[in-house]
Length: 347
Image 1 (tube, rainbow, N blue to C red):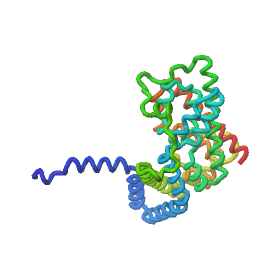
Image 2: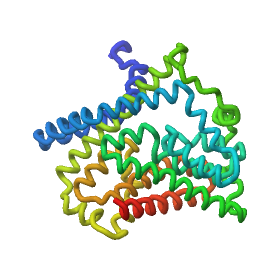
Image 3: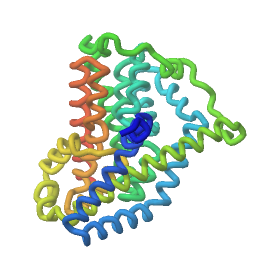
């Protein structure tokens, strides 16, 4: 065999990189291929279900992509810095509100959190923002309305702000006793660009289309978000079709349906390992509700999973000391459980 007949190493690296970047699409294709081996009819039905669901949510998907791209192109996310000034209680409330409106996921917020803590921002305000941020953002609100309904979207928004305020006040009370000083692990954080961003936020350019660089950023953000949302929602709708086919409604109703606190407690703890992604979780919860899960349990699942999903938990563990990590998890789960109870009482 000649050298010319051997695979080019650069081609292998390119293929591996593409596979890593598009692993969610690859997972969807693999799932469909496996289903087709055992049940071709189900593979066709699942594919049709996925396409139909994506088309149904397309208007909301387009709007959410436009909102995310607009925020990045204008620099509107810089406004978040204004939430961390004032009295402790005011900081906690504003930080929770900023978290509920910011376009950060549970992992993406980690660098900003590190920068804020290094700068000396009180842990109470940081925790309020930290807990609220992954639960809701403008794009998530729009998609929640489209996939579930307006009532659920409003409840999730209130839960995001509520868990932020709840966690911030709890940390403030504990910090007053000196139990939470120096929360970061040794060697973590030097501020970085995130620190500079919070110290001196750049002005927001609302008319972003007048600058070529910002127009290019808008297009880049839109393309990235389109791929991101489409691949995760595609996988979610595919899993939903299988769930509706193979999981008996009686099982869901027995575990997560009915009155009482047990279904909400189960959904809170199940949300941690079972949570895929904030956008992907919406249709899954919609399918579970159709199968008999109570809305309160669905909200608890979404809130607990959004804040304490396994990737996010690993990132938090790498950032803060064990006692702060433990407090973060405890506040996340207890806040999600309380939010589920409240929604169950009024829904």
